[in-house]
Each structure stands twice: as structure tokens, then as C-alpha cells.
Image (tube, rainbow over the protein chains, first blue to last red):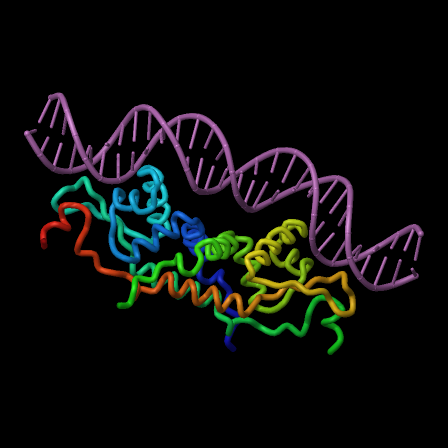
Amino acid sequence: MSAVVRVDDVAVTTLVQVLKALADPNRLRIFDRLMSGDSCNCELTEQLALAPNLLSHHLRILRQAGLITARRDALDGRWIYYAVNETAVSQYRDALNTLLDPARIQPRPDLCGPEGQTTL
Amino acid sequence: MSAVVRVDDVAVTTLVQVLKALADPNRLRIFDRLMSGDSCNCELTEQLALAPNLLSHHLRILRQAGLITARRDALDGRWIYYAVNETAVSQYRDALNTLLDPARIQPRPDLCGPEGQTTL
DNA sequence: GTCATATTTCAATAATCATTGAAATAGTTT
DNA sequence: AAACTATTTCAATGATTATTGAAATATGAC
């Protein structure tokens, strides 16, 4: 029992998309900022010293990965607030926890090379 | 107290390198295979249906990110076994756990747009 | 030494992606 | 309506990177 857990079960494609979204210095900083609370494009533009259109590009990638969400200001619809998608983030956290779980590391006595034949 | 934790503290560059290393379908599968025990190039070539030199390329990136290690067969040095670097993986797991920790998500009443002015 | 094996490195191509500046969209104000 | 504002989309460029085939390295067998 306790079949070997493979990441294929957790959908490689989805996980790769999330990892790719975070595997960029600018996006990692954007995401980390959003963990400290919602923010709009203009605010991030100031804090991170990036062009608004570049911000918009990175925000879209984070959104397509499901990491963040967008909503318009209730009083002035020109502002768009970005926020961390808590449920998705928790889900991805669990997936990465499984992927990197040291308990999953298996011993390997039957190596394919000559060394693996010694105990046979 | 409880200063806002930023990922800058955990070295953005290192984390990006690790995320980049895993943000590829082939490398994610390679890493997941190695979680099931050490393996050599030839074995991965079969299992993943990739060219040996391509495997070698991806294995190097995983190694440069600190995720895996390499050692030669004790009896026949032509074989090279790759294995997950347990201490590094645990460390990266902790870092990602912090990055994606839902408890870090902060409320944001003072939004930069008009909506944030309502309660003032 | 030569030959065979496991793997890596090199060089080139193809694809992906970050960045930039200009134009377009959506919303507000007057 | 026009003028203004926040943001996005578009098109183009430059940089990175995955992939491929050929050559090189390293080790062991003869």
C-alpha cells in the first residue's frame, strides 16, 4: 500500500503555470506586496518602479495562474484593486508541500548501474 | 510589533532560481522521479523519453538550483547517480511555505483609490 | 595502447518571454 | 458632447531558454 505519489496526479501543467508565474523577480515582489494587502496598478508602479503597462502584464500572468484576483473600485471604477486569491494560494501551498515533502524521498537499493547489483 | 515579512528577507534571487528550475514540465517530472529514489541519466532517458543530452541539461539546472546532487557509481564510474538534496529541499519548502502562508495576508482598509477614503 | 560505454559539452536553431513605447479601452468629470 | 484619468492592449525588440545533432570528456574492458 501507500502507492508512490507522483506530481502527475496534481496536474503538472497547473503547477508549472503557478511556478512560472512566481519564477520572476518582479512578479515575486508583486505577489509578496499583495500578500500585505490589496493594491492598484498606480501604487505598485510607485513602489516597484515599473512602468504601468509592464505591471499590467505581470498582473495578468499572476491572475491567469489563479494567484490573484481583480476588482474595480466601488466609487470610482477607474481604479482596479488586485488581491491575493487566498483559497487558490492555500491549494498551491499544499501541492508544493507535497511535492517537496522530504518524507516522499525513497531509498533506492536497486540502482540501474553495477552498484545496484551488489546486494542481489 | 510583528513586522511585515517580505520575501526580500529570504533572498528573492535564490527563490527565483529554485522556482525557475521547477517551472518546466520536464524538470518537474525529473525532480518528481528523483523523489522516488536516485537515478542515472540512462534510466531517466527511458522513463521520460528525452534525449540524454537534454536530460543532462535539465539535470544541471536542477543541480545549480541546489535541488539535486550527483555522484559516480562506486564500481563503475561511468554511471552518475542523481539524488534529491534533502536539506536544501526542506529549506526551500519552508521558504515557499512562508511565501504562500495565508496568515501573512493582510487586510487593507487604506486603499489608494476613493474607496479607501470612505472610512477616514 | 584501442574499443566500447555513460555522460557531458558545444554550437546552432526555434520558441518563449520580459521589456518598451504607442495606441486603445473603460470610467469619471465638467 | 469633450477633457481627463487609471489601466489595458498592441506591436516590436531584445534577452532567455528549451531543444537538437555533433563533438568531446571520462571511465572501464580488452
